[in-house]
Length: 101
Image 1 (spheres, rainbow, N blue to C red):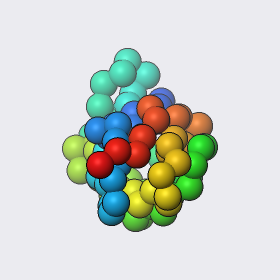
Image 2 (tube, rainbow, N blue to C red):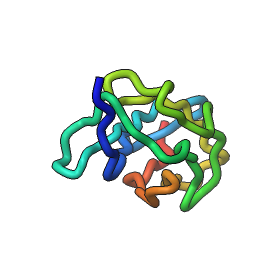
Image 3 (cartoon, rainbow, N blue to C red):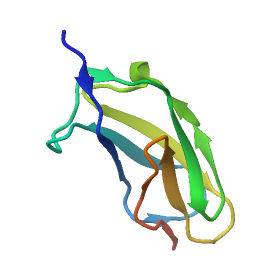
């Protein structure tokens, strides 16, 4: 299997959260925008909030966390403040995740 260079990541969620854990998918993308199934990563990916506050499970992703280029992460937003997720080292930002029952 030939490892492929990861150019960026995509962060997907349903845009809303209530009380409890939310599922978020992190997808590895190549220079052409296609999903990378055999990633070559120089470092693990770290998830943080760029806005708001949340707990991530797991907080760090290695190539082993990805199945067919996608890793599912659980996010627990703190309070009702909108959350924007950032993935390092790429700096990619998610769309806002807003509170709503």
